[in-house]
Structures are given as structure tokens and as C-alpha cells.
Image 1: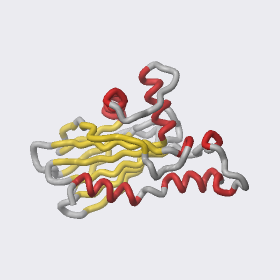
Image 2 (image 1 turned 90 degrees about the vertical axis):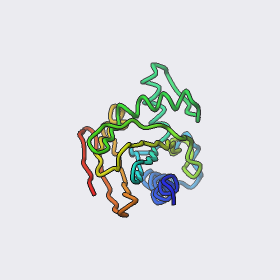
Image 3 (image 1 turned 90 degrees about the horizontal axis):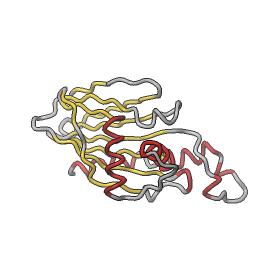
Length: 191
């Protein structure tokens, strides 16, 4: 299984987040189906799956679409933004991502390259829609350890939570990290 396949495998394991948001809002208990505008998620959460191979890291990050659109609109200095998989929006997100998310490979800060992006078609509707990016980081040397800083959407929501699941492919080691606003800083993972 290649890195992208591993990231997709990990992503499938956290596909329950839209269902969790529906359960937490009580939207499923309404006698009538709510309109998409009536669905509001009470949590601010991103999930990231990282697959670390010998010299490459594949990352897939998912977050609520409306939360990301709000953050990117503020960053772009516009009233609103409707995300679409485009070079313009990918560039806007890449600039934001590289400020809010840090990854060090063997102690050296790395910059990711967006491979693809889009709406999670299995997510909910309205405010429950999820948006994802797949990002690749390359190293010239075998990766012995990583450090992560994840402050995605911290500037937007004081209750933002970010979960990062890591799979080190050569050793099959798995680790989950939890980041909560307003705490910042780096977390080290070695194998």
C-alpha cells in the first residue's frame, strides 16, 4: 500500500465525525428533517492523518467546511468565501496551513505541497460538510523522527480541537496527538 492509500485507509477510520456532530446537535432526533441551514455543529474540530514512510510524509487534514471558509475569508480580507478545488483556493489554504501547522522532519522544518483537495462527499450537509486537503512532505534523508505543531483554526475558535493520527509505515507504530486551543507548541514523535 502506498502512502496515499495509507492516508485514505486512516481517513476512513475517522469518517464518523459528521455522524458524531449530528448526534451531538440532536439533529437526528427532530421529527422533521432539518434544512441544511438549520444544522449547526457545536464542536470545532480538525482531524489529520499522517503516514510517515522512509523519506516522505503524506498528510490528509479534514475540517468543517464553514469553519475553514470563515478563516480563509478573514485571511483574504473578504466577507465570505465558498471553497472549491482550485489552484487559487489551494494557494490560499497552503499559505494559511504553513503558518498554522508546523512539521519538522529530523529537526528541520518542512513545507508541504498540496496534492489534492475537495469536499468530503460522505460528510453531512450544511454546516456539517467537511473539506479536506492531501499534502505531501519530502525529506532528502530517512525520517527518524518528527515534531508537530497544529494550531489550525485557533484564531477563529477558542474551543478548537485538532486530532492528529500518525502511522510510521516502516515500523507500523501508531500514535494519536491532541491539540487544544489556546495551547501551542511542538510535540515530538520518534521511532
